Amino acid sequence: MRQWNLHSPATHVQALDGLIGLMGQKDFEAHFLPHLQDVVPAASYSIYRTGRQCVPTRFMSASWGVADNTQACWNAYLSGPQKSDQTLAAPTMESGHAMLCHITDKEIPAQHKALVYEPHGMKERLSVIQQEAASVFAINFYRHVHQRPFTDTHLSDLASLAPVLLTLVRKQITLFAPQVVTSARDVHHWIDKLRAFNPTLTEREVDVCARLLTGMTQDGIAGDLGLSLATIKTYRNRAFARLGIHFKSQLFSLFLH
Image (tube, rainbow, N blue to C red):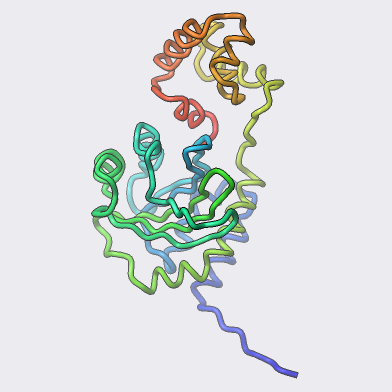
């Protein structure tokens, strides 16, 4: 018979114990980063899904020791950088494969840096990414200007925890995050949500946005409502103006974060 002693750094054990104890609770989002400070000392984090062929969705985010601007960062990301973001791209990755991704502000594309990083004092990102069929799922940790750069030890420690973190985070999302309604049969669900969110929306504006939220195309909405495509675009633009947004991805963000 062969036997081995198993050793894990105490900081890893404490971090995982703390996160496991928060599973299924709302506090998981706020306490996720503090529990991991000894492993990866970041000032903010975000967990999201992105990609050219998916609706970008932010599941969780928060800050530690600084003002929480993660929602503003996400909105800035959706305003332009998300459309061409290749900083998490890994063309050779197969679906389900996970890896670590490290990038500094010097490597970030100009628009991404100007809209997201510089206004919010971020200098560096360390990410655990997992390839999905048509998207990338990412757990991102951000170093801010007042912090020292991530070290090789931080990268190594996060790499060792990455598989467990992915499992815990995905389970938390399943247990707590709101479920996305994508069926056209659920138009009335979104109509109620939209009316409650912004009562100034007109009936037709609500009709169009509700169908966008179910995943229908503008052509499909035109056929469903018996209106021209140009009219659908007009109602969409008016609704977006009332909601203070410019893109469909931002509409999803209002209800799916």
